Structures are given as C-alpha cells and as structure tokens.
Length: 159
Image (cartoon, rainbow, N blue to C red; front, side, top):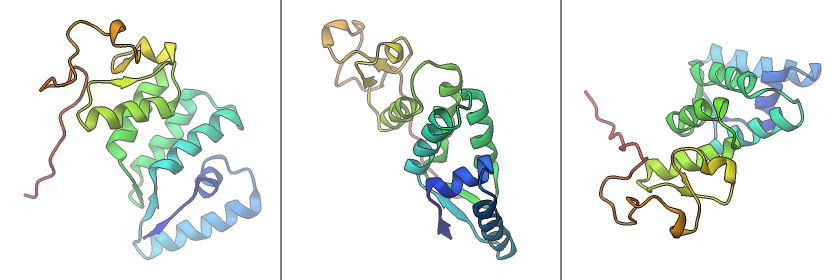
C-alpha cells in the first residue's frame, strides 16, 4: 500500500497539469498491475474538498460526485470511509463546510450528543448545537445513554 497527499488526489480529479497527471496515471497503473492499494488519509479528503471548492470553484454536487468515484474504487482505501461518506451526503445538500460535517460525524460515532459550534448555518441541522447550554433542546443531557443524534457504533465481526 502507498499513501497519497492532497496534491496527488487533486491531479486525479481535475487533470489540470499534464505532466503531473501522467505521473499519477503511471502510479495508478502500477498499483492496478500489482493489485495494490492507495491509502487516502481523512485529512487529505478534507483538504481536497477545500481545494476543489476554493481553487477550482466546483459545486458541492460536483465534489461529491468526484469523491464518490474515489470511494468506490477497488484500489483505494480511505481512512474512515463510512464517516466520510455520511459527511459527503450531508455536505452536498447542507449549508455548512465539509469539515463541519466530518467533525459532526466523528463526534456522533464516538457517542457524543452533538457537535457544538458557533456556526449559525450548521446549528440549523441535526447533530449541531450552539455551545450555550441555555440554547439546547430540553431533552439534551450530557450523560444521556443513547445520544439524540448519534448513530450506534458498528462493531466489525468476522463471519
């Protein structure tokens, strides 16, 4: 397995530098020939979304389409792929930044009640709350056994 950085992933997705794209294509051909895997760390996905939004001005839907293709590749292993997939789905239709959705998903998976943020746009969506406890719904408790918005952790089992 070999890991890739944001600039390598961006080359694959936007093909904007012929020389670098050729290098990445050679890499991917070797990975496929050897039956190997490319590892994409979570932070690389976050940076890639930021670059695609801010530099290349892609829409949320275009970004999700590009990254979904990467997620579905047999040669790619993405760190926390299930969390990233849920964050991408909500990012596509939501108003907050991708990093906010990813942070929320990570918090919920860990068993948190919600992600506290001062971001007013995010606060309009499930799983985000104002940091001021006076603004929380009455049924939020810090020691609640079953988190209000969280998804249950899935324990991997072998068959």
